[in-house]
Length: 371
Image (cartoon, rainbow, N blue to C red; front, side, top):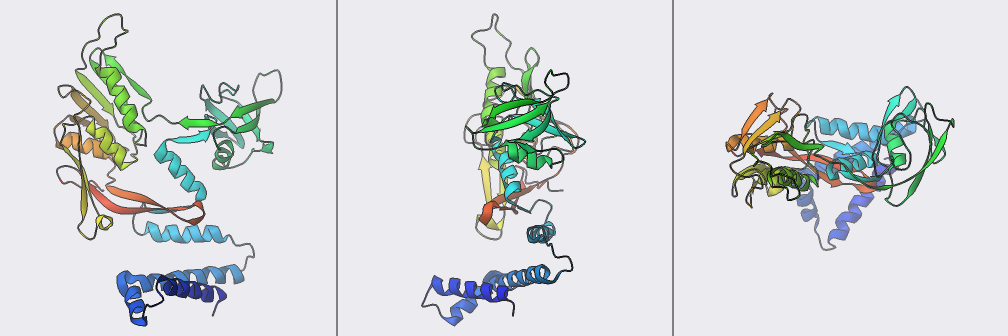
């Protein structure tokens, strides 16, 4: 018997005993039999035993147990669907960034030029104000050379708690000094989901929506107000907003709640927006429905056109679906991606997380668009 098996078995026994000192062996058996708990426990012990064997006896002495564990778990999850994944601590942090739309950083966009780390863009109010310019080559971060490092590693070095500082050594073509030392302060960086909201011509508005994060609904509301409401400081009154083009092309989606909040700004109060069905809501056949709880921000007489393509997915398809199914507007473009699955993110020990598909979603007409 392997020591790890003994340890796992002992830990399991302690957990069972601690749950109730008066529990009977029959109750324990019933507990393990319910919902395949006993089988799950057996397979977990077996997986641990395999890892231990590999660590002890594999022909190569250096075995990356973390990499093996992540590969094994993700192979298991990928057999369920393409979207359920195990995220290690670094990946979990990136996932939080994608869904929250904010992070503590210096406002740099970086890329690779051979082995060099190249600055592609510097935000004003952040790295730009500290002297960083597009085209700079980053040589060191906090005195650590970065040439040849993975870009994810470089990004992690640049990010940190707002209010802290990071030292950069950069090389700039044409500069009088060969290397420039720059001190950058980290701030809370908010990544906008709407890079452009403007008038295409008088009375016709255009909004480019790139994602659905925690702040998307507020950005959308501000964009609609700027386009639809009169400007008191304008020299002459602008014409009323007769039509709005909402561009969801290449929008990969994001948060379900953000999609519902954006939809509320477009469709009449009381409109059924989307429903989700899965065991997580209370058992087999359970579902949860979302409806608009307030009047739309976009005037009801404003015509609406939604642009989509084959990369329009997930939350963006929720907005597209409610506009199409309720005849609120016209959808123009290509067939969308077809992601009709809902994931939750479960925190795990050590900063990791499990992104697990728990439900399917359905448009107001009852369509599940999962391809």
